[in-house]
Length: 71
Image 1 (cartoon, rainbow, N blue to C red):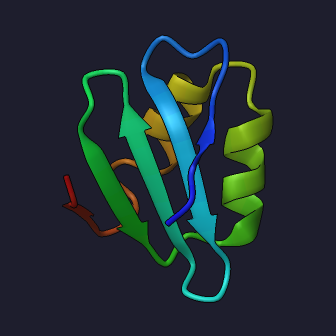
Image 2 (cartoon, rainbow, N blue to C red; image 1 turned 30 degrees about the vertical axis):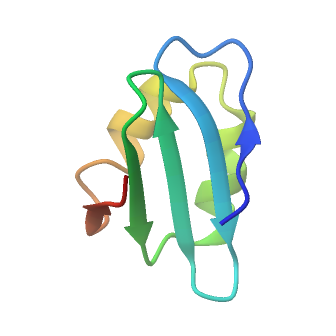
């Protein structure tokens, strides 16, 4: 999945999203990569627009959607 670099986040380095499968992929600054299933496009858009991406991620994505480590 193609990811785009994120600027200004101390925790998240890159984010990718596949709308057809509603899969969100997050690469963290520690280099681990996780995919989250069933993430609506509105949640992805809100993550990308959040003033604190890490804060939004931990409150609205991390423990809400099923995930797996991919790298």
